Length: 370
Image 1 (cartoon, one colour):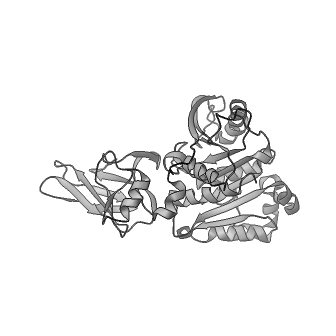
Image 2: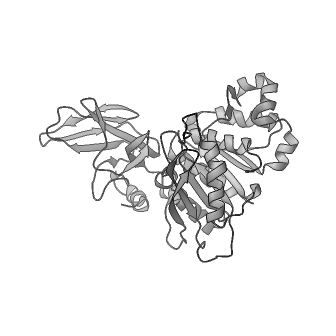
């Protein structure tokens, strides 16, 4: 069942299968109160536990089916696992997604169809393409993979060049996250079709990048020395900082800040979703402002001249989910107190999960390259 069909069905049925279910599997099912019912056929198992935020012991019936219903879940995408005898494994009834450092089961708790329309494929909307590109990294000493989204019309307009967004996943995820869990391609297709976003290329790489000699993290060197030159050579990009953006979620937000603020000759648009600005022991939050010298020195002094910053960076976008708390709102306010212009967005009701980040991408993309 597609996400669109699932959302429409959810308005009419008491319980509906999750859109992440394999084939015609009817479980897991999401109820109208956002409780989720799980059912697993394991007649020889002596115990079974659902792990979804917390552990739920499952109950076995006379036919060997184990069942449990969770507490109400917030809207959005949720990883979960099954456990027995010390073994953690995936639910065979659903698709697996790379998250929590491994392939993992997941459910989608729906919001209303109108709210979900921006990440749901729409009939009549031209679709872009997502390419899987393998490349050799000298920095990491290994073959790696990136996903590259090109907007609708890319192939039909060989003379047109496009700005580029480098978009990072969170901890325990990889380059597949923004497509399979985040629907970044669908979000951009819909925004561009509505005239709300500029057509752009999106590049997604794995943020786990160890240097070949084992001397430390090679992510920044890999992106700046290998990925960006490769993308500019292979795709029709506008290859300058005014047309290059970087964003990420959670751990990927830190990576986005490190790239965007640390390589000011490469990026002029920065987005951080559910992540704080941090360098060494310095964090942009109230405690960080106790030492103005550290603030001014961060990222080789990028914040030391607010006038320069505001003239040279087109956008600093800070966002999170309402259920995550107010610390990023505070970070945004403190930056403004220091004269650093930024935009803050908060996703209503959502927590540290993919519905938050889909909404963040939507709001960020609408402001890019304009």
